[in-house]
Amino acid sequence: MCCANKFNEIVLNGAINGRLPHCSAHIQKRRAIGNGAHLGQGHSAGPVENLRELVKHLGVEEHVHFLGFHQRDDLVELYTCADVFCLPSRHEPWGVVVNEAAACGLPLVVSDRVGAGRDLVTAGENGRVVPVEDAEALKAAIHGVLNGWESADGRNEVSRSVARKWSYDFAQAEFRSLVEDLMRKLVQT
Image 1 (cartoon, rainbow, N blue to C red):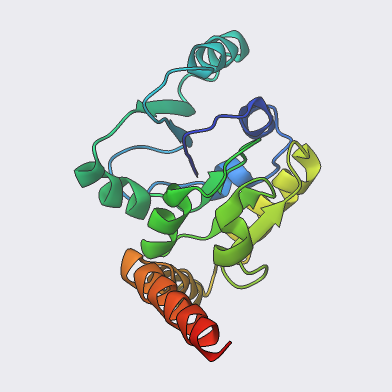
Image 2 (spheres, rainbow, N blue to C red):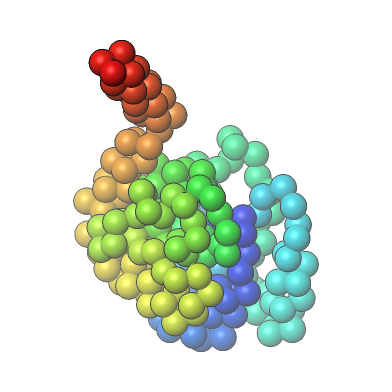
């Protein structure tokens, strides 16, 4: 599992206290990064130290790996090693990391406070959007995505296809089209 940037104790507690049943058996890294929950972060350490203390307190250091900040060049390899991308943010106006994970073909689990979720996640096709801070919904989403990902090739392509539609080039073309339409309407009036 790859949890990015905005850490949420619900995810960590759920993963290591068994509230995400069977996930540890399915959360496998496909490269030498190792098995378990892998947590990345943005530029700020923020609540990471609290999570480190929680991991130590629970005695699960061998199952939870803090990857720290990585440069853009390293991200594709990290994403492709993950089985699921999870961003349970309390507030995320867009979340470019969701675009990145989708472009790598990952199933996506995001909270309903992640703006990108509305446009990049289609339930049952490439992931799930869950209510913020709802541990049970998060558990069900991660479990469902991992267990339902047997025919991953087609679903991976769904995520990649969605990501292509939300590239910078796509956004630029859409914006240009919108401006041109508005200009035509203004000229007509």
